[in-house]
Image (cartoon, rainbow, N blue to C red; front, side):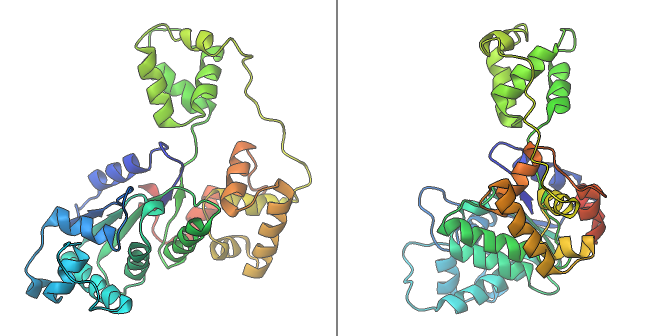
Length: 324
């Protein structure tokens, strides 16, 4: 599971992972959402559209149900109950995966329809499925749809072997490094780096667009375009009322860890983690775990006794995926 804001690099990380797998997967099934007119089972319909419809006998699915899942507009939709369709959809994916190894890619989970969310959660819980599920999503919004996305994220990341990576904006050193690579013969001053960081917010896509607009001109133009604002972009220091254990917990939240993972990492109960998270939301003035994690990133608040990323790695049984 890869989460992060738009333009942070989720799709690029997925593409890099697919290129780096060794051995290469025998099957890659990729589906996306229809953003303008979502329909039930958009993810599977996109997969079937990319792969083509194999014979129904190979998929062990009724022809009319398969056509419905592929979103054939001429197929009646009243025959199958939702639970039956979900079971058929899982069966279809199993048949497409075959003996594996396979990779199932679901990008933009936040935009998928509820039926697709149920299917992905069911696939994640399907035993002996020889497939790696790669999912990208933006952090859920604080509305009804966002709550549905949050529940799906919890299901996907709560299983054994699940790894969640939350991509954060580039920090000042990374922005400086990017500018130095683009302008190897120019003087990249602190003012230039700060201007680029202010205007892009550390978002890789926005930074790329910013440099494209600059068109190879002197990077000092970034400072002029920024209005010559002061060099410093430091945020005010975070409040000091967080306890050492709360700093541990919020650092784990920033690493994308679920409550069970935090409990295992810190040696405390899930109920205690829940109490700490509730206190953190109140103290940081945030409305959700995601907002609290972003608050921790902005204020550079992390564990007092161990790095959160190390804690996250220590709870996951598949370091190869974490490295990807």
